[in-house]
Image (cartoon, rainbow, N blue to C red; front, side, top):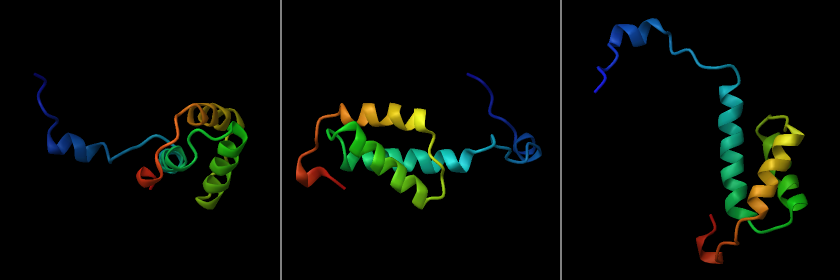
Length: 85
């Protein structure tokens, strides 16, 4: 078992995070939301929903990554109406 990092070592790192971490959180949120509401729909519909919702959060979508997400979400089976959020 590895020892836990001391508080002083955590404090000295300053809580550094990779550049773009906030944008990635927004992308993750939108992808999960669209995966619940648009699963099983056409890739074009899913891609449009992703792009629209990302722009609301101020994120400029990456076209290649949106295509990957859209393909994966459209391949999912639809949820019954009472399980959608």
